[in-house]
Amino acid sequence: MKFRDYIKSDKGQSIFEILIAMAIAALIVGSSVTAIMVSSRSGSATVASQKAYSIANETLNNTRSFAESSWADLYTQNKGDVYQYHLAVVSTSSTSTILGIATGTEAVSFTSSSTEENINYTSWFTIDNVLRNSSNWIAGSGISDPTTQKITAHVSWTASGGTKQIDLVTYVSRVRTRSITFDDWSGSSGVTTPVTRPTNDYYSITGVTITAGGDITY
Image (cartoon, rainbow, N blue to C red; front, side):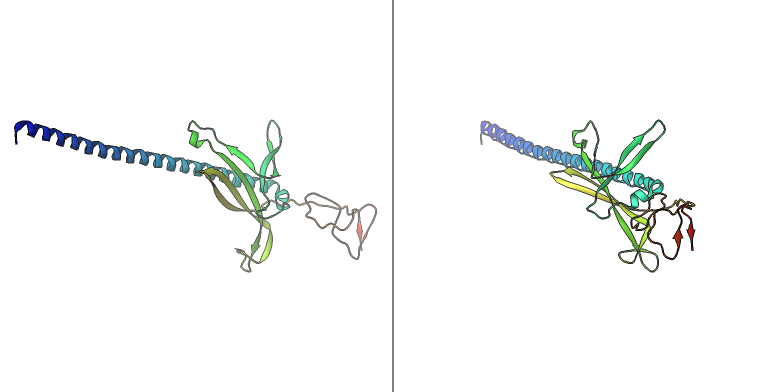
């Protein structure tokens, strides 16, 4: 083989090696970009879930505080998954903010420098009665416990073209009982709903007489 032919062959081999190297580099770069994109999506999904958990946890804490101060208002609500509630501001003053139970869901949004983290969440909670078995444990069947309610906080959001949702559960109990001395029973009978305030009405009466002033005589 002549020297000139050797040079041509060597040049052809070098170009072929360069093309192979470029192809390998493209594959490596492509894999790296894909890995970065997957990592970014995974990181955004984690942040979204953490924010949703924070919203749900705050809902449970606020509902627990509400139950401690306004047990009757919580207990008399309709029960079950179909009844959605959220806490809303009823009134405000310079020293306090009063919350009340409102029906429906609540929209919660976060503002971030990252577009992927600007997610709109939907938050609500549901209320269920609690049953206890013969050992006084919470169970799926048994006797209803009017001093305990099951609260489930729900948070949903849209991600990757679908809907994500988390649910957190807690149990709240009536820890404060208001005692009232009442001596006026001049109201009427037939009350069947829970009593949420002092009243002189009652469910039924047998064998006694109520005077005009509200006194009871046998």
